[in-house]
Amino acid sequence: MDISNYTAKKLLNHQESDEASMTDMPQNFSPYASPYTSPIYSKTVETVDNSLDPNNYYIGGGDEFFISIVDNPSINFTGTLSQQGDLYVPELGLEKLGKITLSEAQKRISKFVQTKLKKSSEVYVSLSKVKIATVSVNGAVLKAGTYKIPGTYRILDALRAANNYEIPSMNNCNFREVRCTNKDSTKNIDLFVYLLKNKIDGNPYVYPGDNITLEYATQKIMLNCTSKEIVSGMIPIKENEKLSDFLSLFSFDKSVDTTAILLETSLATGNRTIQSISWDNANSITLHDRDIVTLPQKKNYNPVDLVSISGEVARPGTFPIIKDSTSFSDVIAMAGGPTQFANIDRAVIARRSKIYDINSLNSQSNTSVVGQMSAIAPIRPEIYAGFSKMNSTQDYSIIQIKKMGSTVKLRPNDEIIIPKKDIFVYVSGNVRRPGACLFVNGMSYRYYIAQCGGYSGKADKSNLFGVRNYANTSQMTDLSEISEGDIIVVPDSQQAKFLSTILLPVITAVATIASLILAAYTIYHK
Image (cartoon, rainbow, N blue to C red; front, side, top):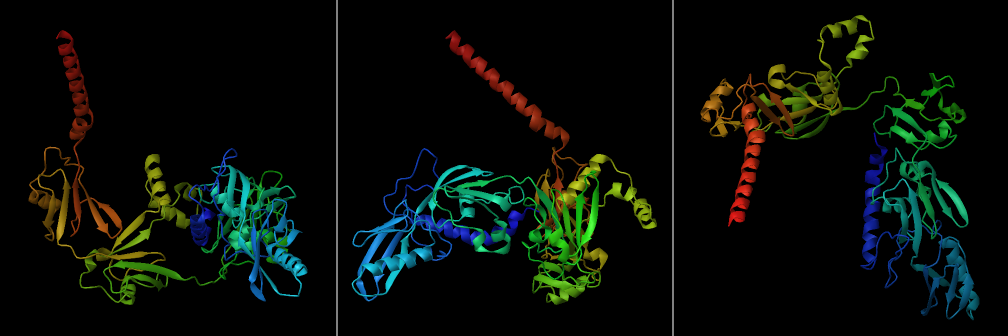
């Protein structure tokens, strides 16, 4: 599972606020610029964000301050910080501030102004406009280069700006050690602290001159957790990272058994070993590339199993069940019963199919497996590949209530579909009058084709098939039984396909060439 999806909703509001802030910029502003071009600003472009953290925002060249005397509001000053970190206030003089936090700068500016006043007064200092930071973004992004972005942007915002405002793949890129180099420092930033633990300090503000590098992950481990609420998949790790530090990034629900962590790791011999580790001992385990960490579910932990019901019921939605105990009729009752428009005879349960691996069954020898194998006929490789594809695309099995009965037991994640009543059968394709015919119980597909005038000359009579729709789910049928709402499809014959897709285009092309030759001949002889 790509863990980028884990943070998509979380970052959406942040992204919208970023894009909204761009509306304050002049029309010639570009969110990024090449090293050889730079936008021209006709005015100061970025006002202060209300979410600005004064304890983590470092002032820099271009930040503008508003200074007011509380006792006499008519006395106020403005000053803009120079690239050297100096604040010059024309009426008061120069104060050297340097690279300090906004909260520290406010204190020092207030103290500086007070020394210039004849009497002691309270001084109000605020940041009125923020700097534009020129930063470089390199590595695993779509558009590496030099960017001019507001100083309120953070490291993750800069990476998104260099990646078409999309977050780079968190499974493939090393968000654990994003390198940020400036003239006075180099630091590695673990953005997972922000993305997974929601600690804003883990996503610092950009600063003018930052060189931000996001590399591809070279070390990953597989996190396997039974809890669906937890991020799983191949996740980058730091060099010599301890298991306890890695697990501290995640929040586990109460179903996860953290007392029995399973670690599968490679030995120097090339073999792999599995060991059980308690949470208290996790700080002594160093993770390595391609380790597998599994957090199993607690014993006898009762999960919440749910099914959904849609269509013609009084209260569509999601309802709890007891696995292999709650029946179809039980859930219908919970949903308030069918509406007057419901066709219960066509009600179905859509269930995810599970395709068993025949090779794994062959490798086992117990009696239950032999029983399963006896029900599995040999199949050709290409057919088995189709089954594998069906499993990977999560196809459904359709259970018809009319045949199985309303007491059929439900399983977690089943979807119950109650269709509307329909009085027609639909015939599509190569018949003389395609369209809808009144449904007559017990009649075969031949009856409905006859009602539509019979087959046309292009019809493939041996490959007819049906389509049965259940809300957003469809099922192909062999037309052995026709139900109201079914669609009978009469495809093109192979001969018609040959004529329409091969022969006719060839004849058309030859005729076109011949007409061009004739026209050229006529013009030449005139």
